Image (cartoon, rainbow, N blue to C red; front, side, top):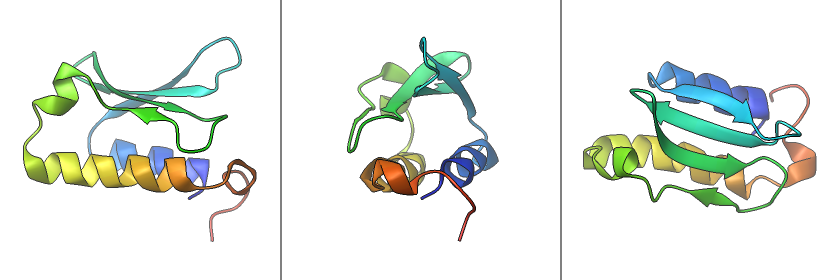
Length: 85
């Protein structure tokens, strides 16, 4: 999954996504200004959803957002940039 596809899909679900960190490599997903998930854009299979805001989502919303996070985290780093397929 390309980075642009990921960020657009997260925003389409109604969440806010921001790049943070010194090298802007970490994605933070927010619900109501509270962190719900963090994804390391420079690491393969690195994400964290152990936040209250994520835990309070209903199962359908967890599956929607969690599936996107997993799909992006599972994408090899060298395949995340460039044009969407």
